[in-house]
Image 1 (cartoon, helix red, strand yellow):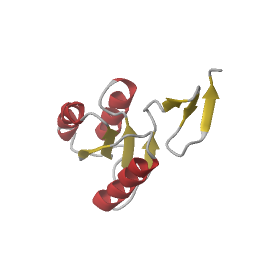
Image 2 (cartoon, helix red, strand yellow):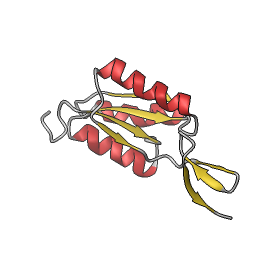
Image 3 (spheres, one colour):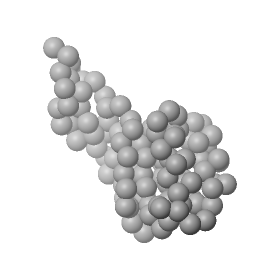
Image 4 (cartoon, helix red, strand yellow):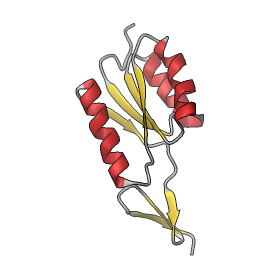
Length: 113
């Protein structure tokens, strides 16, 4: 298969459902190797299987994007497995802490106070 993303490596958070899944499948259909980061292992298994038929690789890593250590680990694992990382798609919703939404590195995204 030759596509626009041939030879690229993409990491997609929350790639087992909704927009994340559609994004992961589109990247795979365009030839990218896709690593799906998600908390739910069963959902990942369902998401990865159809991508394998696209002629590209698709794997997953159990990840909680609200934890900086998990984010660092998934990026490192993606680079280890595929030899690099070209594209990252953050489809996961960040955790709500103390009235504000915080990303994996604790940065304040918005407030509901």
